[in-house]
Amino acid sequence: LHARLADLLEHGARDLAREMPAIFQMLGLYGLTALLLTLVNMWFSAAKVVVVVDRDCGALRGLGRASIFVLRRFATVVGAYYAMLALGGVLFAIWSLVAPGATQRTPVAIAVAFAAGQLFLVARLVPRLGVFASLIELYRPHAAPIEVAEADDVAELEIDPPPEHEADD
Image 1 (cartoon, one colour):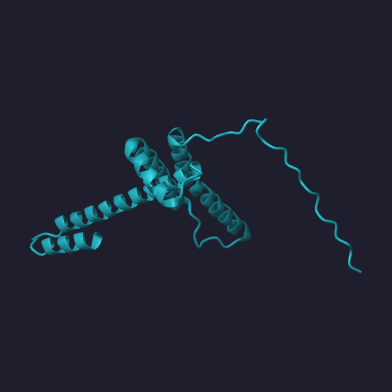
Image 2 (tube, rainbow, N blue to C red):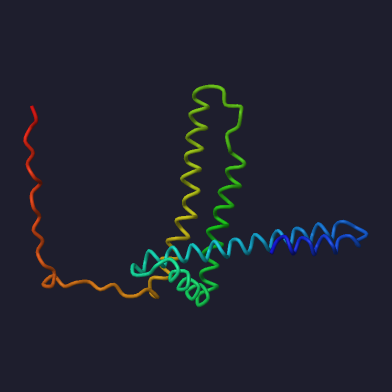
């Protein structure tokens, strides 16, 4: 899709007298590509949630159920996904301002830079886990109910002790 649109834009840009419209068209193409990629990523993230929450669901059925779920709650799901994506962008912007560089030469500075890097790695997980937590909470009312067995219905399990081994001399 991106290649076909890029070919169309290149063909249309040949007749332009100025290059700014072509630059804006290319930026629009990149924006459209990024939007489509994030929507597909959101769809697959929802499918992962469906497969985990609905234990009797396979991968293909999960994609189908995720499609229905995302289409029914489109604004909410997209809002949660892009809010967490924006949080990740903010974390990345903060990191770009305070990221350690090649100026750390003392052992203490290297240790602080290492600790800052590890903290950033953990902070990057927050938006990703936030997306999954949000999708789980949004999907849970749509999931098939889980049957819980009554205490009287559960048979008592007898666990055999491990076999005794004779010591080899």
